[in-house]
Amino acid sequence: MAATKRVGILIGGGDVPGLNMCLKSLVYRSIDLGFEPIGIRKGWEGLIHYNPASPSTYSDRFIELTKNTVRPIDRTPGSFLHSSRLDPRRTPRALAPEYLRAKTPEPLDLTGHIAQAIERLGYQALIVIGDDDTLHFAAHLSRLGVPIIAIPKTIHNNILGTDYTLGFSTGLMRGVAFIHELRALAGSREQLVVLETFAAKSGYSALLMGLLSGVDRVLIPEVEYIPDQLAYLLTQDKRQTPANYAVLLVCNGARPALEPVQRYARLLAPDSLPELAQLPEGETPPAEPSGKLTQEALDGYHSLVGSGMIAAQLMAHITGEEVFLQSLTYLLRTGPPDGQDLLGAANFALTAARLLAEGKTGRLAAFVQDKMWCDVDLQAAAAGIKTVDVEGMYDRQTYQPQLELIWSINRPRSQS
Image 1: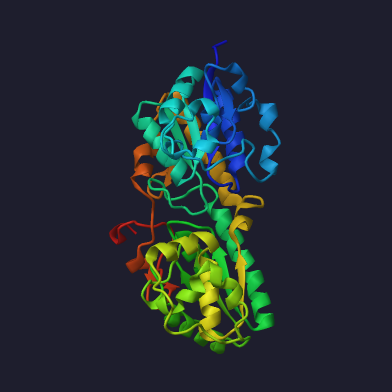
Image 2 (image 1 turned 45 degrees about the vertical axis):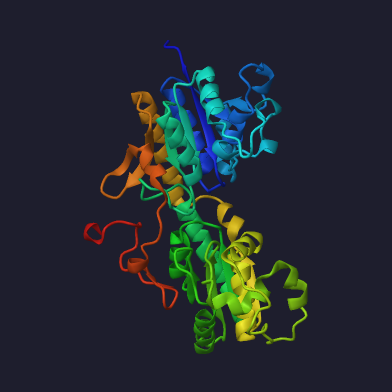
């Protein structure tokens, strides 16, 4: 019987539906191909806390993955191996083990330690299941000669090189379902409702969610919005709806234009929130703010409270209407995967296992329209992220989707 070969598996970024199904399929297939899969807990953090000179650091961070170990995990959400968003190139000193806390300014670049740990562990390859940030670092390691095979997973579907990412389909479906439920609540209360999705550098998933759920307006990170213009449109939407309500979907990362929002500067100062809560209904802040709002201050406030909160505050004070704010965020990551993500989980795993058997590293398992299930150069994922083709998919004046055929993004129209 041929000797087995060790292969590491880690997961980085947020949980997505179908993640455990992907891991189970990958373990089953790799074992059948003669490999010995080893799970690394908490993504890159697991490797950061492994000290090759101290064997005691191994047991808490690594787990042997057998068929019996992973047999039931596809029935539960979350990540069996746990996860983290830590980027080893920018590691806060407090999150690094004591022996790696060099006397250098934060953040620490622990790339060399990660590469050394993987070499010491003797992996045939490291299979990385992750979002755009996780895969960007995986591609960085690959350029340094570390054998990497990657699987794309994120509800945002914003990874370059693939037209579909694990979790996108279920996240979209759950978002639409939640919006329909909250729409009924907004109609009962005759309110303007602001719904917020996850922070993202791309508004693609929010745009599709808004289109398929029939919301009135959608805000995306790619286009700044004019608060007064948005308020006027939502007021019209509310009046034209028989049940007297309107729905605004905000991708966390969408921002108001700096100059038009100056007159609402006092509204966007964190220390003014208690005072604003005392304002009579319908009263707006002074037209001339006491101080000029800077882009840095606006960005800081966004990081503090989120784009949904800011849009809700602005709409409430401009329109004088009662605004109901609800964050969807983590609800999109929970629940069972739909059929597409179950199939996607299995096919991504089978593709990665094939690459492992063929000895092909530096590759990304992918689904590409004209090639179906395939693999592409991992460096494609490191070139950036997919963003919305604003001219072809979004009306920046009305804050609404304008789509013809719906599938993926950033494809030349001649290829559609």
